[in-house]
Amino acid sequence: MTGNKEVITGSDFKRMVTGAYSEFLLDYEQINALPGAGSLPGTHVLHTMGAAVMPLAESKDGSIGGLARRVSAAAVFGARGNAGVVLAQLFRGLGKGLSGKYNATSSEFGKAFQYGILYAQRIIPENMERPIITVAKAVAKGAYHAVRANMPITEILEKAIEAGQESMEGMEADAGARIMFTFLRGCLRGLDGNFVSPAVSLSLGLESRQPGLPDPREDLVRPYCVRFAIKNAKINMKELEKSFKDFSSFVLTERQGDRVLVHLHTDHPGEVIEHAVGWGPLKEVHVTNMSEGHALTMHGALSAVAVLAVAGNKIQARELQENGVQLIVRGSEEEGPSVAELVSAAHSDLAASYVMVAWHRDFWLAYRQAKRLLGNRVELVLLESKAQQAEALKAFNPKHSAAENAKAMLAAAKTN
Image (cartoon, rainbow, N blue to C red):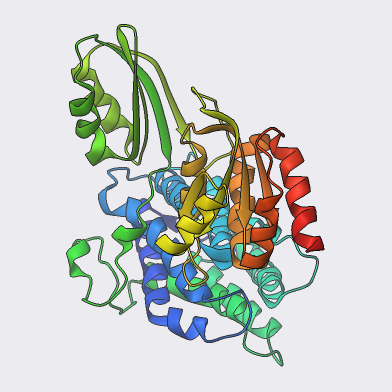
C-alpha cells in the first residue's frame, strides 16, 4: 500500500464528466466511421453524453454522490442507440458506487468505476464476445489491480487504459472499443484539467460552445414524474398549464370536483412543488424518478392497450397512424429514439398497457431499457425492418392484452 490520501470531490467529478463529453465531441465522427456498435454509434454516445453533462451546469449540489446520481439519471434516461445505452450503464454503476458520499477516496472512486464497467458489460444481452466486452473486462481487471495498490485515481485510469489497449492488440479497430477508450481518456484529461476541445464549459457557461457543434441543451431530459392535486376550484386551467411549461416537457391537468390533478415531467421537482404551492393547498404529492425501475401507474387511461412506434418524419408518422399506431416517437436510423422519449410516451396516460415496436436493431437496447424501467405493463416487439413492422401492425388487436398482441405481432413479422 502506498498510503495514498487523495480525495476526489464533486468539482473533480464535474471536470471528469465534462472531459469525457469534450473527448466525444472531438472523436464522435471517427467513431461513426468504424465497424461495430451499430449505425452512427459516435453520434448516439455524443447525444447520451450531452444528456449526462446538462445537470452539471446548474446543480447546486457539491457532493460527488449527489452529482453522480444526477448524471446517472440523465444518462440512463437520455441514452440513444445501443452504444449510448451501454455508456449510460457505466454512469449508472458509477452513481451506485458513489451514492451517499460527499467526497470519495481514490479507492472508493476506483471501486465505483469498476462497478460501472460491470453494469456496462451486463447490458449487452448477446452471448457473443464483442470487442467492447473484451476491453471492458480488461479495463476492469486493470482498474482492480490499481485500486488494490491504492494508486491515485489518474493512475487507476491510466492502468485501466493500458490494460484495455493490451487486450486489443492484433484486433481490428472497433467502434465499441473506441468508445470505451474515448470515455476513459476524456475522464483522465478532465480530472487533470488538461483537455482542450470546443466543449461546453461548465464554468464559463453554455454559450461558450462553438457554432456548428451539437448543442447539449437539445439533449436535456426531465426524468422526474411529478403528480399532485391542487385544492382550488377557481383555478383557470389554461393559465395553470401555461405556468408549468417552463418546468416541464409534458403537462397534463384534469379538474376533479374542487381539485385539479396535475401530472408533469421535470428535471427540477423541487421548483415545481414550490411553484405549485402558489395555486392552492397541495395533496397527494408523488415524485417518481423515471430513470429507475418503477410501476407505471394508470391514471384515467383512455384504452386498455396501445401501440408505440418510431417515425423519422411526418410522412412515416402519418403512415403509422393509418396502420393503427396510437403513440409515435421521433427517431431514425441516424438518431434513434432516446429512452426518455419512450418512457415519457408511456407515461402519457393514453393506455393501461403498451406494445412498443422497434424496426431497427439500433433501437433494441433503448427499448429493453424502457421495459426495465416500466415493468410488465410494457411488451416489446423487436424487429429489423420497416417491412417486418408493417406485417406486425396488421396483427394488432385492441381487444387482446399487450402480452397476447406482442406474441401475435412477432409471429406475423417473422412468417411474412
